[in-house]
Length: 263
Image (cartoon, rainbow, N blue to C red; front, side):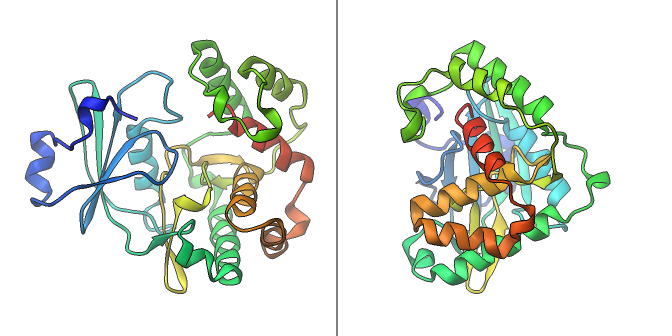
């Protein structure tokens, strides 16, 4: 999160000129690390500029939103500013509820089908049109840098890795790196809170700062894990059935869950 001194939202003047006066409410759902505020029509994200403490920058998110716009449903970028060592990204607010909301989870079969369909559509986008390389050569280099900088939160590791060090996790990733990657356009953080459901549709993919070309399992692993946490193992397995079992490698699911520990 941004420093405690930024618990209230103070916008840079260029954003105040393009955003209407509003009552801003702090958002606490999600794990992107950025501070987030919402009004009735807009969302503003704030985080410290630079460094490795965040998985991606808001400038990277802005670039990816512009690429994804018109290809899959994403918020529209309203403005981006840097002031006082902080990044500010203003977006339109996507109507609906995030997929981890209890009202969405109540219709579990519909949700699982929507998630499988959304990822199939995203993963079907042409690789040649995507300028963002998030393959293992990039992701592992970023993970190594985060480990070396000491910014990995080891207390947030999954239960089976509690007590492990970030160095030991990285060493395991290096030792077990898959021989080949099944490259597609990925979301990069495909957990339930990053899908916005509106009725019978997913109307928005959010927190796309790590979107780009990567193995499809980078998304499948996180959605599968998120469904286990929010629903149950049967729903998570049904999601893989609907996505297409012919594309699923259980060893890669485990590998990309492990990789996510360092982000």
